[in-house]
Amino acid sequence: MNSYDLVVRSRRVVLPDGPRPAAVCVRDGRIVALEEYDAVGGHDLGEVALLPGLVDTHVHVNEPGRTEWEGFASATRAALAGGVTTIVDMPLNSLPPTVSVDALAVKRAAATGQIHVDVGFWGGAVPGNTGDLPRLHAAGVFGFKAFLIDSGVPEFPPLDPAGLAAALDAVDALFVVHAEDPTEVTDPPSSRRYAHFLSSRPPTAERRAVGTVLDVARRTGARVHILHLSAADALPLLAQARAAGARVSAETCPHYLTLAADDVPDGATEFKCCPPIRGSGNRERLWAALAAGLVDCVVSDHSPCTPALKCGDTGDFAAAWGGIASVQLGLPVVWTAARRRGHPLADVVRWMATSPAALVGLRRKGRIAVGCDADLVAFDPDAPVTVDPAALHHRHPTTPYAGQVLTGVVRATWLRGMPVTPGGPPRGRLLDRSDE
Ligand SMILES: [Zn+2]
Image 1 (cartoon, helix red, strand yellow):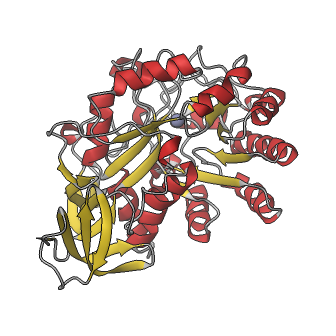
Image 2 (tube, helix red, strand yellow):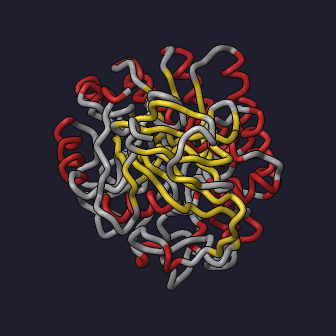
């Protein structure tokens, strides 16, 4: 291995065309060769799989401004511990929200020096900033997030359909949309019963909003992506739009794929997110859409808050913040359920690394291939693990997965060829669209 900085060998290297024994050879932070497993020496993982580092394009870091909810150090440490080597930070819940070039500069300054994985940024499209979008795009954001419904924070208001159309017309960029229609959503009563919250945000709210997004996309020709799809009822609209040639993609999240409304205990506000976790039949339809390639990505929507805002003491679903923090747990959660359904590890890698990287145009991320960054994760796919909130690195260890027995443990991680651990120095880098 004299001409390489690092060689990692495994009998299960998950390559774009499937797993096989191989040696991944690294120089200057990039993968420069793939050799036969036995051809070179180096770090030997044996039967432990080698995956590309996951790419999570849906993470709310909240710093600066709401750092007591979550921050760059804790969020990226959690990501690293979970096999995620790249995150793209959402533009809201931090103060200021990332809706201008100046705000992006504030974000980048806040992140500098404390990130444990590579970090890129989404911009935000809100009423009044349409004129800023081209400059913000040029400054390096990967695209723009917009809401069609109240976002939960006052400084990031939603767009109406006309406002969304104007934003899509203003800049040739990827738009990622929180698709719930406010006219189909009601205020839930104060209640410890999950069903009361669930019925306030019915599947029709998602289906109708997805229809709006697809309509606007069709008229403008813009590229759109449906965030955190929960309602399977919206899938036929997506399928039709795709068949008609629309540039549309969609993601779902580990919690929609693995949890179910009927199993949410009274007062268990750690299960609250928007759109909500629905019934088990809905969940099975999401798996089918994922298997069929209609849903492209599985990303965390890591969205923590303080324990007080999560209302764990009262268990009031109406008052609790909606958000589930799972950037550290997504890989074992999804892999455990995927394997049970007969999906190979390569499918999980496609949903959680390759497709999210492709979504944001990060060509050197999300794959083990010559020329890509050597973001590598040694993952023992057969090792059992029980979720222990005390082992979570995000700021507040609230989780709906507490006590679950999962399969799959991250054994080691390399970021651009450097061995990295959550307890080590922060070696992450800021990413922008020039890294495409
Ligand atoms: Zn989100």
